[in-house]
Amino acid sequence: MLQVATIRENKDLIIERLAVRNFTDAAKIINQVITADDKRKSIQTELENNQAESNKISKEIGILFKSGEQQKATLLKEKTSQLKDSSKQLSETLTNTQNELNELLYQIPNVPNALVPAGTTEEDNEEIFKEGDIPKLHNNALPHWELAKKYDIIDFELGNKITGAGFPVYKGKGAKLQRALINYFLDKNTNAGYQEVQVPYLVNEASGFGTGQLPDKEGQMYHATEDNLYLIPTAEVPVTNIYRDTLVKESDFPILHTAYTPCFRREAGSYGAHVRGLNRLHQFDKVEIVRIEHPDNSYKALDGMVDHVKEILRELKLPYRILRLCGGDLGFTSALTYDFEVFSTAQDRWLEISSVSNFETFQANRLKLRFKNANGKSELAHTLNGSSLALPRVLAALLENYQTENGIEIPEVLQKFTGFDIITK
Image 1: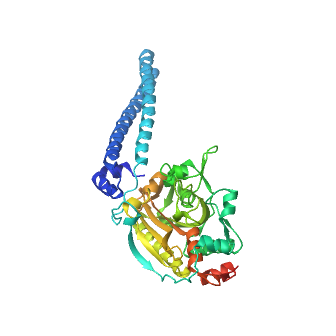
Image 2: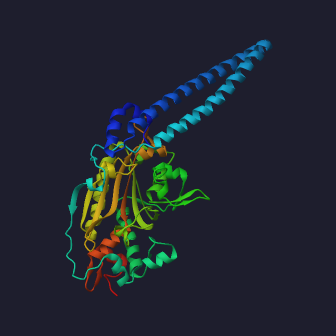
Image 3: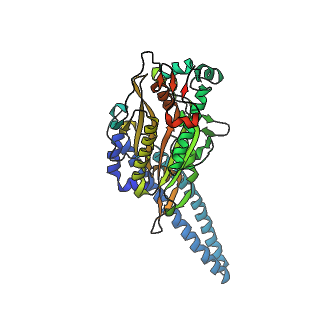
């Protein structure tokens, strides 16, 4: 959530940068924010004046009672009673006005960084890096959903029977490969300095608002209505919320965490060939990295996260590219996002497998995540997160790119985790 002071000080620039997102209501909503904040300030001033006058009169009443002037004291008590009633009404109006202001602020996405290109769809994203050779497969190469059936390692029909489409069952060496990837990712992250945490898979409403999933993605989250809890769409939500309502020390930076969790997404409206097999699921596994950073270091940290994911994909020997997301494809809470995509040779298409983002103060303002700077002043921290990595499409790419006529080979870096080097019938 943007700070009102920032909006006031940078109104024209914010409207200009939000245009990169194609956020056409920017000027209208920002003007409404300023008007609502003016109203809030006016009510706050009136309330404070009322309270100050009430306190002043209370002291006078005490003096009058001591001096025996009870009649004058009684008259002043009637006035304080009126002031208290007025203050109560003003306090209620102030709360309502603050809520109206917050509702407006919740509608405004994060301001894109100057590096974010203009654009409306994923076609306008900028490719900034590409690495790895695309393998040449044998003539009978199959997409991963056919390989999964051939080698009996993932059962999509059984998952459909148990729950529904988008909930696969991993079997045998498929389950072990999945577990191997999780352990490999976690080891890479912890060796890079990220502290592993295990977090809840359900979060409350405050946590959803804290990281920006609510109200923006409310329809995409599974909601346990009786308890008003939400199944997490990513470990980013519970991990970042560890620091909600927290004042950290400047010396604590950087704060680094990694977590493995299943993730749950309704993915409403997702249909077609591009969502077959593991390409898009309602439940999937992901290992996440989260950083809490000093504002002066957050973009250097973002570059470091990008390099970290690069190293993982190099070790897996998967061809990949990095995209800088355009304004139209940028997430609601992000100031700058880099997407990683691996090439699926059997499908002849790129598959997104990671997003690495800097949210600057957008989440921290919602979370009330602050630190005391060198001058002793409270300041908002910066939050960042990245997939390191999301498993379904990594697994899809591994199955497809490593397939041979004799079976599916296992990347060398994973073999100590799997205990086997090939999947055969």
